[in-house]
Length: 421
Image (tube, helix red, strand yellow):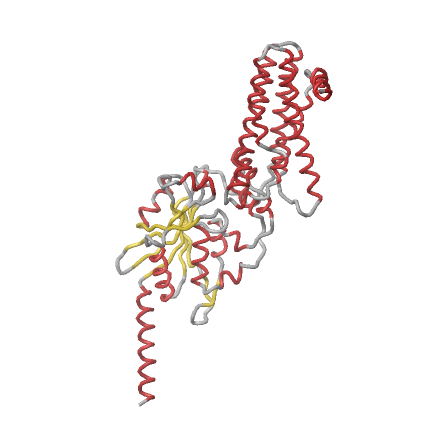
């Protein structure tokens, strides 16, 4: 009797497994890789999961990178580092049509997954889009649309994906990966990297690389895993090119050094600013106005960038901006150069102009000194931030505003009087 019961149990178990397996036979899993777009938040591309059902003839795209500017307190949450994304689902044809229409690359990776796993992933994805589960706290490097797909691939392979890439060292740091995508826009590249601290300049793993959609697909393309039957299986069976972007800046395979271009740009600006002071020395009125405006605008630009830098370091959850050496030389004090520069340009009172000139020199002298100190600190093992681009951009400009000879003698005399008081 016991043998019959045991046999019946195994038969029922086999039938249940067969039913589950049969249910997954009608499903197909694919990954959609989208290239960079025009908007800043699209520069790093996008990735989504596609699940097709041959029984119904329907195909759905599961998107883990959805957000809305209309979301309650969106900009406040973004500012303090609590940005909420969500997972949504939509018919694939409709969801994918926007990418060719906006001149973006689009590739489809078909996955070889056992039926039972296909069903498991579909149930997992369907659970993710439920109202109570769809929202998550987004992190640019640790939890985004790409890392969610990476984790699904790890589920498909029963942890073998992490086993292969979780400890393997990356070829780049997070900053270098960022710069591979921002190189084509000097202002965008500078400001993004200016705000990010030395936390993103440490060695990472290939697993960490996959905060980027393209890195997920790079690693699944030739990935093999052992399936439930013990068979070595190639994960990707085919790659279909749906659209190739035209005349869009390519993502660099090797990040280029940005600091030489920033140095040249800074030297050119410094020569122009020096020429304004030359005109001023020749008693040309326009020289005084142009010199005052230039020092004022530089103070506004760098001061505003510094204000946001200090805010992100001290009052937000943007942990990738923490421990930023740029705080040593670029501070909100630079904002004072804006009204002082304007006053310097328009005042007719010689004594006041000398006062404004002295204050401006002090502000930019502190900046230049801070840059030199931040360079010297690199000899210590606690400071490793790759911020040469920021240093060489600001150093020549700050030196010109500090050492420009016009009014230097009178400024020194004024400073001596202040000291004697």
